Length: 183
Image (tube, rainbow, N blue to C red; front, side, top):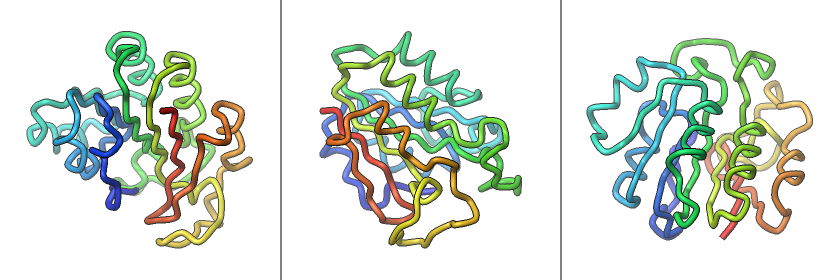
């Protein structure tokens, strides 16, 4: 799990922050000074309850990431707002509760569905999408190493079917990030 350690989120100039995967709130801590509104979803209610009081201005949702994301895309995110999406909802319960890292488990790697939702509801959105843990989609010189035993079948090629190649870049810091810049 990444924490956007080396990202200056303010430089993107986005209005709204949306994350899938609340975790321990590390990414929210990095984000909260820079946006007008904040949204965070996690399947683990205990994770949300543990951080909720630290972030009074964040809208939390206990749900599968794709359900919450679709709701926010339909009902909350305005077309004239720019959004920074931080997609980190993979392997529920694995990082914090000892569940196995299994790419075939239900809701284990929802990135493709999350990106399809964003593209469907915000086809002209001037948004930034940061996808965490690029190293589960490809091998490379990642700061925290590779995980050859945990590769998502087909890698990240599906992203090129959703967004133009010129908008996509991989960063090898931490566990790696796939950045989609639609500005």
